[in-house]
Image 1 (tube, rainbow over the protein chains, first blue to last red):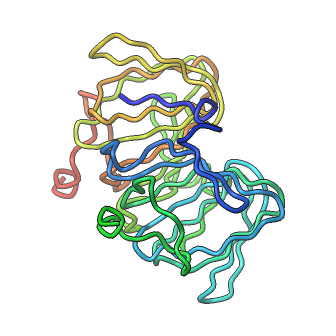
Image 2 (image 1 turned 30 degrees about the vertical axis):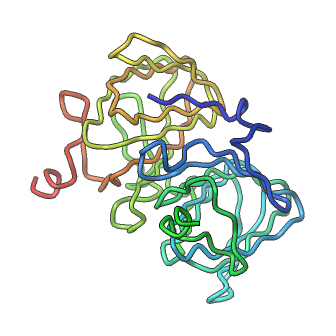
Amino acid sequence: MIIRDFNKIKGTEREVADARWKSARMLLADDGMGFSFHITTIEAGSEHTFHYKHHFEAVWCVSGEGSIEDLATGEVHEITPGVMYALNLHDHHTLRAKTELQLACCFNPPVTGTEVHREDGSYAPAEDDKAA
Amino acid sequence: MIIRDFNKIKGTEREVADARWKSARMLLADDGMGFSFHITTIEAGSEHTFHYKHHFEAVWCVSGEGSIEDLATGEVHEITPGVMYALNLHDHHTLRAKTELQLACCFNPPVTGTEVHREDGSYAPAEDDKAA
């Protein structure tokens, strides 16, 4: 059994930060669960375009308000506490935070922890990441 | 892209209830994400013994207070908002809710939605469930 506390991970090396977002890695690939689990904080007023071509991601809004735009269709969905979006089609999307968003995120395949977003908004597939 | 709102799922057939717990199925096997994702509510004062012999489960506490006991070791871990437990060893465990617990849960392999807890606290493996 693995026990980890988000409140103790915040601000440590298990919390990865990039431009106006940070993500506490609660579970990574080497935990052997077959998925990774993250608590991600998106800064109020920021926007982020991602395209996880090699991963499925589900995101559940714990707190805050924002929106997600499906860049294939132009459709915009409001994000409020309790709303989940799942990128079952590896959807290219823009996430906008009206207020600070706290999000619980699950990735399959699991993130290894060393990925960075590439220019196209994707993470490399796990094999490329291992080879890098 | 799948969008679902916990606040709209509550009380519908996507929310499964059993003795003193209920679980809103945000994502199930047929969503094709490779994991399932649930928002589970555990009634204050209740206790539950589970043993997912065929699944990995990670559980992140959104709100409430309780504890988890590892029945193999007798160790007890406090559960408060922000704490995650991950059953990476298919750990036999007892979950106790001091106050109502709201939990974000992720299962691999994904739950199909038709499982019931068996006498031994497990869910059947997906193959058995399909065959049933």
